[in-house]
Image 1: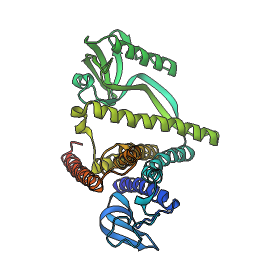
Image 2 (image 1 turned 60 degrees about the vertical axis):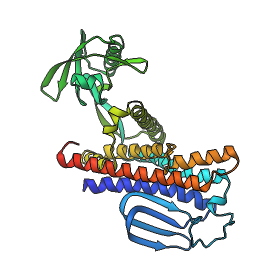
Image 3 (image 1 turned 30 degrees about the vertical axis):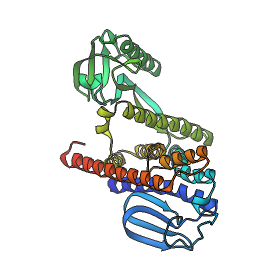
Image 4 (image 1 turned 120 degrees about the vertical axis):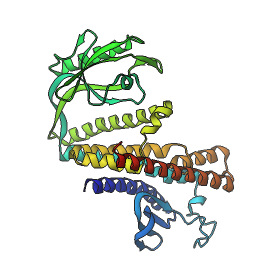
Length: 365
């Protein structure tokens, strides 16, 4: 059941994205002849007055089709309501609407979460500093630190006496300052892993991108509970703050991927890996599932903005070039670039699906 929920969420986010393109075109009076959720064999089809709507067997993609270049296009080639005959700005609105739809939907998901199940609130502070994430290939990973570890001591600093939010933030700042001032110097750590295990590890901070780091995310070791919102205004403000955090999480993740491609590329997941992550979260609690939905929706928007062929960002890049040149690039060049990009994108998708499936089957992921 959890896998079906995860697939349904991914399909919903794709539907939202394609609906953005569709609505932007229809609201401008642009002809649309196909709206498809998924790829492969057709499971359901409805032929409207102008548009064919379809649900296909593989719900891990979708598309909005325009009749512009169809051999059997029922409209004259100079029809002003064909997409290709519209001004650059109109076409930019259509191409960017899918991204905007995902961004807006992510915020609405967070609003719904806070309004329905409550707002996270700190219930109890536990000793130590939590390590939620360890970057691949980082000094922390080399030292043996794992996600979920709790740092109780670092050198002569003791964090095991943390009892409230103030002391927790103070401990966090002290540890970060210790790391920044210890480039190339070993820092002995006492780590709590699970409820019983205490380990003695040593990490050596390194200078990367102008700062000294060990390659982890740090957070207060706190227990949170959900409380009812006091007002509708609080729901929207808390959703806005959470939205900003999720956006920055996606942006930072993309930046780390681009800056450390060789070490982080192996961590990239395809549709199968995303479905597995969602299924795991569906077994936890509703809040995790809401956060997963918002995270993937924003991720889908950011990735589609990349100026790569076959993605929305690729189409937008061509439109910007057209606006600068004052005329379109040669159609054959445009088609060749887009077709090559589509083949590469599909190839990458197949590789990621294969990798994720092997990892799940072998228990490596």
